Length: 289
Image 1 (cartoon, rainbow, N blue to C red):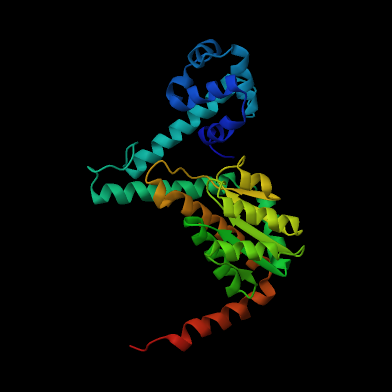
Image 2 (image 1 turned 180 degrees about the vertical axis):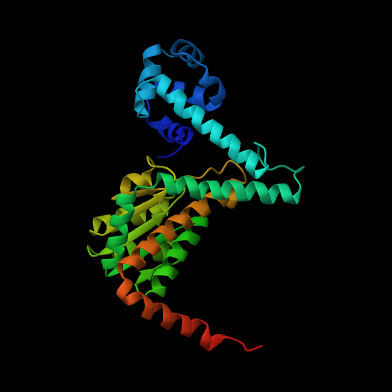
């Protein structure tokens, strides 16, 4: 199960206005929420006590007491993780040493992979892996940093003899999507789920009958809603968002989850494919020293 704070962050845009205010009050000060009563949290959020109860139930809890217990466990675990990693809360800033930067980035990127592993739906992941293993071809779609994950998926599948197309050119991506077929799979990577070209590619491929998969951090985004299956990542990009650090690591983790499962499903063909590509890439192009 994903962390409580991440669950609240994902749900806030789907809640009623009053419940959303409660959610934001918890996100703004999780420590204060630990000691809040229904009445005090309602007052802080300028909402009714009923809204607080509905908010807790919308997250899958019986009420505020159960939510507080889960929140306390998470905050305690996070503190232990921070202490173990010898880093403090806060963004990377100009006063951080190189050692601080390396440690902070390693911690947050590792956490993104860990959270994605807990969050991702195993049944959906297995459905996608089976579809890719049996498909006539797979098309990987992504723009910018998400394109790196798409390209990685294509390269890995090609190594085991599966047809997977990827091009960094968005016009080519749209062309590939427009030529998709019912026995093909399109996997679209989009952290925020609102990239126009990715959204259009998913819509085109789905209209052609292909299985469409969105790998995204935003379950209510246009790309997610357009796809048949959503594989959720969990990454925060408050720091250096333009560099797409944690999001890229979470997407690459999903690529590895898919690849290894597909490889398992095609085990009979796996050894010969890997050996053939290893010889082509390494033995025929290795400089003797």
